[in-house]
Image (tube, rainbow, N blue to C red):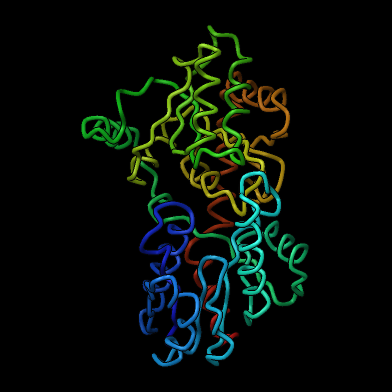
Length: 357
């Protein structure tokens, strides 16, 4: 079977959507090498208005839009289509988006859901959002979870983790030597991810008992808001932001060395860092909303992201009871390995290709 992909994020995005695209393609190529995979990296106009006809001309039997949208000519092209829908954050967390952007996303992504022959939701939570916001019939939607990169399934020894981090410090990827004990937070620094709430919860821990927070990610206006709060409350020695971690092996090492991973996000389509942490047996504190209970399973503590006191309560429980934290981490790892196995997810996807094509 010849399958076309909108590969813009595959080539040009180095975070969530790009990681999803690369994990999907890598998995398919490994398990189904006899299929033909055409990765289209088109300029904006061609990607939006001509890509469907190009896929038809190239003999594609199926076209997969990997990041919420399909080309506007996909129906006229005659090529069968599948769309992966990641989240509806512009609807659930509109304060992060300009009004015009929200209208554009609603038009493009909503239309794509309607014209696709089938829609993949990356979580049950996202499936509910697709039905709620765009009135797509449930029978037209399949939940296939977002795959995690293979490397996270291969645990590091403590010696390997220490060496990876030391090398990252030596190369400048990490700015300086890390503390022995730290809380980890991973992801883009924006208001939806709720880093400020985490910092405020950390502040409630008495200074003499307070471990430092290591943040791996970057941002703009909201990052500055967090930095301003840190400066105003004299928390500089307790919060450190690393913006240059570009190697997932180094990220894996950080998960394996952290006391816990704290991810009190307000909304996620899936919550990939939660699963990445679970696979390293890193204790997890995350939110009790959207897809995060699905991603975390029974081995995480779930807080109310709108409550600083709730975040603080569960932070303290994990920090104060290391035996309980370790037991939960083992449960979380078992859940992640059984629910998000990359081979199983790839097989589910390929079965859907055969059904829709």
